[in-house]
Length: 135
Image (cartoon, rainbow, N blue to C red):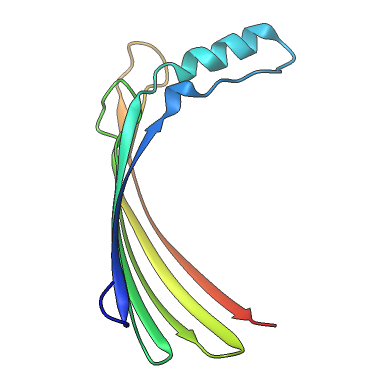
């Protein structure tokens, strides 16, 4: 905590995608293929750090997240997320706007075996607006 006006957080999360399993499909072949696809994933780590500060009825926050590549082929498909937000809070209502910029996530596509591999960089910016009423 930063006095009575804010806080800073950090966390590391371990995710093991390989533990997931598909079951209950109508065809056993589809279930086996889906589970074989899951086996290409590995245990990975997510790192997040953020801070939020407020003064009177206004708040400001920012953060950073690093999401490691969960695929065992290690084609550097990691993702970085940068976020920023502003908020206002009254006794009966609140509002918030946030912007998240994701960069670095890449997908490699090959239309058929032996074909050239295309790399598609997937960068995105999301904006969310939240308005609420307390009752």
